[in-house]
Length: 78
Image (spheres, rainbow, N blue to C red):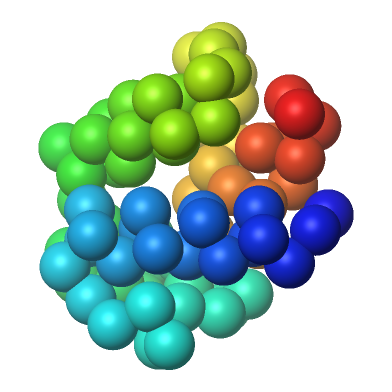
């Protein structure tokens, strides 16, 4: 995975989750990020689809519960 893709994912997450991109790391997850609720999860997935011109399946949504997981799923689509 290129650093550019990771930085883009981090930037999109920061906007959607209303947080500082430098605070997002592999441990950032739905469990420990207050702004990452079910509504923002959908917003995040839609924003990533638009940013990277990719489409996710419902099963992908369920896997994308941390920054690390998001990077893995997006990387598999590129």
